Length: 281
Image 1 (cartoon, rainbow, N blue to C red):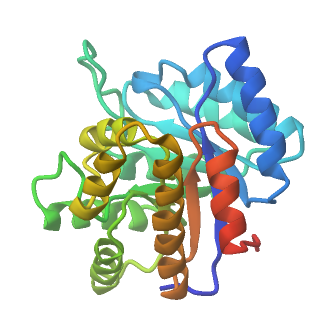
Image 2: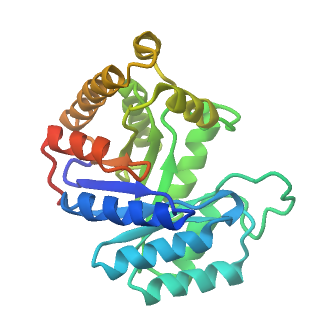
Image 3: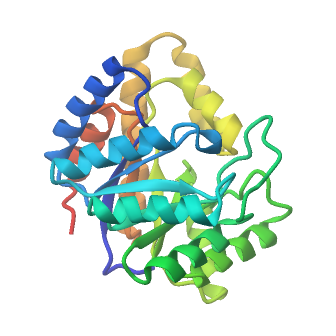
């Protein structure tokens, strides 16, 4: 692993209401005190909130913080993606998270790009080295992958297309991450692979998210969380302990940073950050 590279970052989703926007402004202000390397901003299926992504990124940048918009190739064409890249350059964005994205219900046309590696190649061709490009990685295998080997080959194509680093889907089994990093190295892929970290605060929500994205909740964690039922205080305390231990394990083993899925909340991420004593490079 690239132990010289350390990036600690946080992820937001674009708010849909003014109340949500105010909450996110408060969250941004509080998490900015931790000095993360950047804040990434997601998009909706099929680009349904791509405008919201731009507005959120623009606000983060205007406050003097680094923002990294998620950019999906699903449903996009060269012209509108080129236009969006130029808009991001104009507001000072230096990072992009380039993803394939999920095909939303009712959409039949993929657009000009079928896979994330094609999007990465296009960004490089259009903008050179302007953007630091992150791509997605799946230590527990992408749920739509034909096989583990095919998934690894897909990831290698993204890295070789010009990605600078990768952010993983969240996981709770560190061995899956270590195996994935080792397999990537054997395929000549040496870009930093940053673990995605999901705080545990609500078991029913976590189970639903995990079922959708293919992230495994180890049985011993699931059984403990089930046992707490509606005891939110115990769930939060147990979740903090488990995820803090996971992060320490990863960092002690040389992980090149951590990427926190904040769910637009301050508390869980700030608690983990402080438990770990993180300082961004």
